[in-house]
Length: 304
Length: 298
Image 1 (cartoon, rainbow over the protein chains, first blue to last red):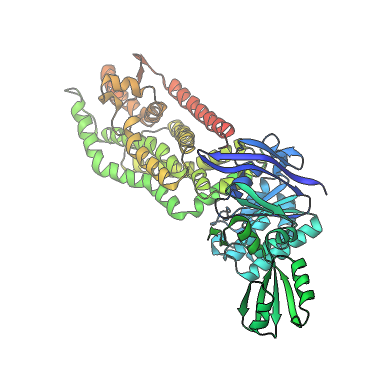
Image 2 (image 1 turned 90 degrees about the horizontal axis):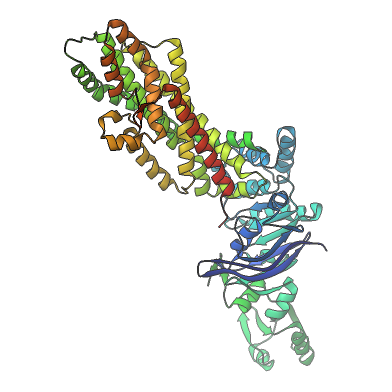
């Protein structure tokens, strides 16, 4: 697959604070790329440099083969950004907001009305067009933010913690839309999020810690490398579980045994087949990966 | 200039959506006029009458015209600049709530954004200053001090336009460095308090020391006030002349209320005053656009 974003040895400091240190990674066209890290890990700084908002100290950023600092005008037509907090004009109506933003890309008149109708259908906000943004709920506002980001049909959609504070139903709706865009338009999605479960569907994940890459890979490779498996064993007593000689915890009607990997789980089952009548093997979660890699838990963006 | 028209429209809508800001800015000149008329009119009248040489008598209507035209020209000179500082807030709001990031990730040119802020601010300020002008002319007519010809009124309209553009250009350059509403409010307060003195509106600069006068003659606002006063009072002076005021008395009056300005000892003609103001508008607007283009990323 074609490389749509290439970042090489990217560095950025603010005084003595090294916000981003020697960052290198590649994003392929059409993939969902997830950027994970606690607040202050360097995610937003990287996004700001990627979007031409901040100057890098050193390194290289190529978007669609173009250098961000030299050819940003070209790149700006290919990226759409959903910022952490909505940056639309709250006193103005949805239509006025989108009209002023569309004009930045030269979309006006009938072309704008056509695009507005498409987006209103896609994101289900046809009934909100004349309502001012300050009369919308958090989820409705987020839909308008996404509509603004994809007004000009960008190739890359950058989502900076897009679902923070949204109810599960709205989060699901947004993810349905984003997944459809990826499938139908081959749109590349660059995501930062605090919700670990949202990274489970990512094609590639980079975990940042203190401005440096702490780990990178597919969800599966990260889980295999940094998080063990769990065997949940049903219909058995505790003395039998102890025979396995592995760490375990008691849950309501079963025992959960931690094993380093699936291979070890298979070995355990084959050596004690009489104990494994009713069981399931579950891969570790991204939370486990994040904890193992950074030594930190990610709760709502804050370090724990 | 992709996006210029819609961005200007957006900036104007944002300004007028804040009805509190719009109406408070709109009524400020009217409140000032009421305050001027209530507290300063009699002082101006007495001071003018007492400054006349012995034996020179002035009819009440002409005295009214002199006082009211001086008052309203001062008021308009101050309002055109101070109101522009109150109206030129959208670019600060955009920085405060980070909307500016939404524009700078798009292909729109920084110069287009700058011009759209300038035009929107100029239009909103003009609506208010022309309202103030209408009220001021109404006040002149009511007080029975109307000596303005149709051409004078056209000149005054042009002066208000020029001074408003000057205020918009100046406020754009200063507000460029501000990024919070608190800073904007502080700067607005300082300008409102100080500009009237600096431009010779509250007190004619001929009353100041020669050194201070020399410094104030380098400020374009001084010429704006004098320009407006010259056009507002032309009819009054014509009437004084017709009434038989001696030339030296006329010159004395004109000097005392800054209708005559002297730069380095030489009298500045009215055309030159307009030229200074137009030049300042072009200079400050150019600086503002240039600052936006050359603004470095952090």
